[in-house]
Length: 245
Image (cartoon, rainbow, N blue to C red; front, side, top):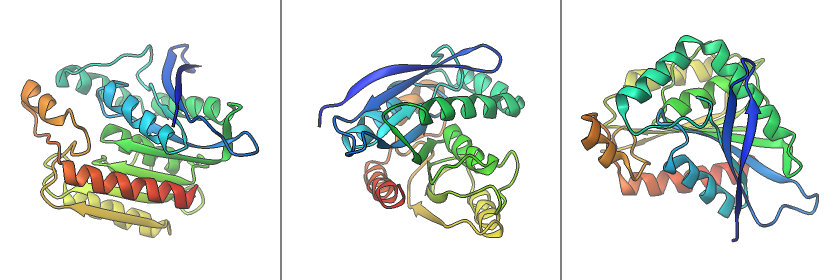
């Protein structure tokens, strides 16, 4: 399938330009509207991996938008810098969620987008963003996370959390513990959320990112690409989005 890409510029409440990356499928349905998946990147920003994810989603027929939550298109391959930016965002969680809401609303108002059928997929830091957007009450229909941080800004409630959830977690993840995943289970059950959690044996943090081994070597952090877990979890995510959106 032929896809096209462009930049979506959203103005954050504090005036920062958020430069998200859009990948569009060749064909929308007969209404001219397409199902849409937001992509919340890892702490590196909108680097090659989330752009590739958006393009792969577009090839599957979705409008896909890799979200620039840092603003001004900031990105890095340095873990110290990434951690600094992520920490700043987490310390100002209201501003982070305001930025996410602004991107969501700009995407929902695009002429190609069916605003009734929007989901989100998040990776690592982006997994937390995806869950927190649903916890906030944004009308997302589907939330998928890959090696995501499940810690909530505010825990899910039945009244606000309307999305179905798919979680892909690596058993060998040293950054997000199985206890944290168990905590997410309890949180989602208490809010009566329809969810599925898949645990991938031998998979480390970042297992879906083909650049994880390189980032691990450069930064001395415990990341690792796991080709089989990446393949299997991607296929499940696509099926989940097709079923839910």
